View 1 (cartoon, helix red, strand yellow):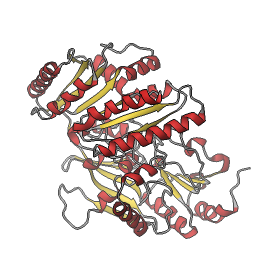
View 2 (cartoon, one colour):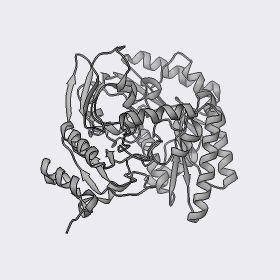
View 3 (cartoon, helix red, strand yellow):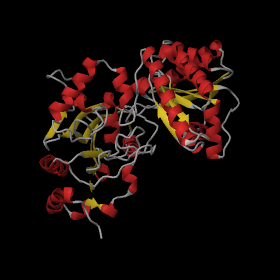
View 4 (cartoon, helix red, strand yellow):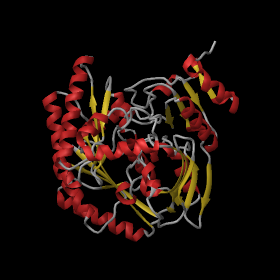
Length: 465
């Protein structure tokens, strides 16, 4: 028989009296997948799950949570990597995946309005099918739009189009007290007081729950080209990136990966990587409305890279080849995860001028600690994804090495004027590193904002701060 503890019995009774009881889950009705994220480093099941179907229902749930002082965690698809959606203190989990409707495509204002539970891949495909581009392109396409906004996800096209923040025009947010806020609008410019919309972007659910978003869309590029550029060493490859970015061209994506990551993918996919054998690769895309401009840009980039010391430049001139290479890039995380017993990740971001020094440091650290740290990342914006692999180490040794490596990586990133996270957020996992890297004044302001909007500290407790 499905039961609930005495602590949560009053709010459960209120929830099932106001909502369809099938939307409220307890006990064995709760899927164990709701107790962890993609990386599965932290696990804790909620005591209650509510699957709302509207903003008004989310507001009702929050009013009851405040009344009964129940901690609340909002969750999308659970594709995060830092424990941001894990209900560390149990309590009530709001699963937003049923709120997945695309509401409106406004071609006059070039906006698309969607519920927060819609998947990135579905929103992007919908826009494309209508002849438009939703620009943000994080590697995990099965993430929800709400999750992308909550972490200000970046992705591969950020070098040209910016992060998720740059494509959000308006938000509907439910506060801790159950009030509904309509923030921003379809306007392109806004100097009307404090921009509260931007306050909630990247706030990881600790200030309010995003339920709807109005997103900027663009005309779909009529032409695009991708280049795969192998190099003998990472120093040469990375020194080419600033030259590309100040060459007068505007690449859409500038990705970086090394041979050890390719080997993980080849084992995972049981395929050979096209043009394998180099130590390092840059993978670039150029897009635009005029094919001759795109051609001129990629030819200029190709010539620049060859002058810089590239082994060759391969134009991915068939749809099959382009799909194969970019699909491999999208699968790197899963491939590395499959190559080891356990792993954890860092997505530190440094100034683009410092990427060579940072990558050299990761190689040195891996050698000193005798730990694999395969990596890949968006070097067009200085954001590297580093994966520390347990392999054959016992759990105690692994935990010690992981702590040592994380501290060294984040200390180095901060020394290079970088930041703890470029797009995955802080969540539960990276709180100590944010606290160590932030000034007391910064932390005090963040905590003051949290206290003003969520005085009872019910929203996503134990995250960020």
